Length: 110
Image 1 (cartoon, helix red, strand yellow):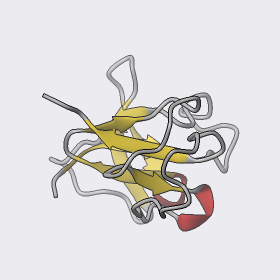
Image 2 (cartoon, rainbow, N blue to C red):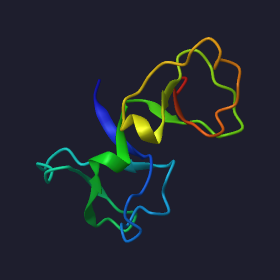
Image 3 (cartoon, rainbow, N blue to C red):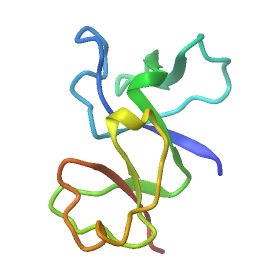
Image 4 (tube, one colour):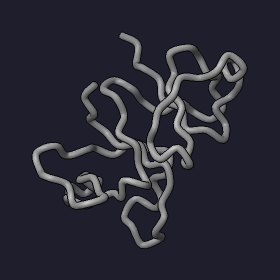
């Protein structure tokens, strides 16, 4: 799977540029080698900046975040801040429940 965005899971440093973007996607820059322990991204202003690997998870191409009030569906992927970016499919018990308290992404439909 090709990663095109980073989902900000948490912000371990309140001085980082993405501190207000937890739960949102930011672009992932592929044409530069990352700093150790970091991904390269672009701020909304266009500036190149780093995102700590422990704070973000690369998302597969075509996935976008699910709103907290939406119901979890088959095919969704779930990451929790403690998982450090490892996506998993929902369990049978989670399907049909709300995404509140979890970071859930869903494949966009055509």
